[in-house]
Length: 445
Image (cartoon, rainbow, N blue to C red; front, side, top):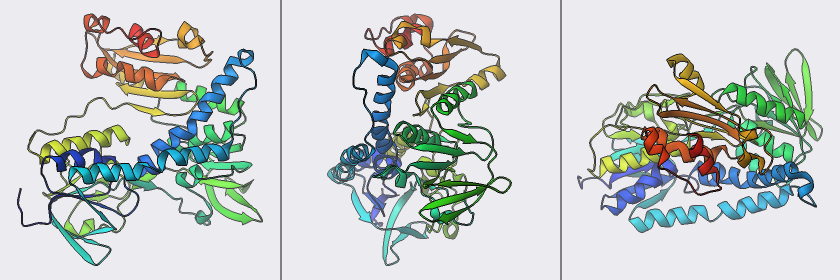
């Protein structure tokens, strides 16, 4: 690469779309810079996946204890304050570790906010210019905020995960990943929870019969769902808050979570100035080499327009691909593997490959497995456990959707069969450890 710039490759943002590829790229001798205005690691390690799954661990344990009933004595209850403290102890060391990973490989970290000056130059905090032959936009997503009166009275997902005291009544606006996962947590930890939906569909990207079972279970546990809510405004009401919605309807609550989605984090980047095409709702336009409309500027992770799920595994794969592209290991377009997705409700819903809806449209075979009656799922008395498997005409497993407390592990176990289109003989040669969920999953494949 050329030496007339400060860096060969400059990344804007330090999340998974950056560090998974930037560190090994720097280790090859490529000059790498990373600009980050916040914590190294971005959303997932610091205020997303890692924090969420740590908080959820207590939920998973208390749910299992409830199911086992009289088998256990002195059933556990969640101490929310202690749970949040435990979460913080897990995530606090992560930025330092990721910083060391980048710097030990030879990358240079620059703290501050970047704005494009031209196609090869960004200005840091308005007073420092940095140049690079190639620049990667990896700024991820940020919380969407409702454009209604009183929107400043609501909070985002990071604020929820930092609550040292759980409010008595929590109102959640939105029925996506964040809304449903946090409704599950807050309900299990003892809060009264109301979920306000724009329409009447929850988790629209997941298999709806499974979603409806999860929602029915939450309702039975006391969570209130209000459909077609048409939230209009938030107001202060003494020490509480008032949500105005529907046809002159009101709801008084102790805390409001705006979980209406996440949007591309592009504020102040100056993309229009340099000709990078983007949409404020869907993200940065890229081609099959993750190249934007400006030849030397690339983008990766949740910030790009893509038909792949906006999840960490996709960002990881894109970052690794750019590492190979920039280091000369490939010139081929990106070819995505099967990217799985999961929502960490209780039970979870996980899926990979061809969906049930796609299978119906394509005329593929769909098999239903009632897992609640399978002995392994009876060990911890799972009442809601079912899977749908999709096979092509040749008998290859091409898709799976599972609802269970172990769905993420079952789907992980089946990914090789889907990705590599294993035939029946190949599948039969994969024997998992017994007794484990992996063995059970392969046995059904």
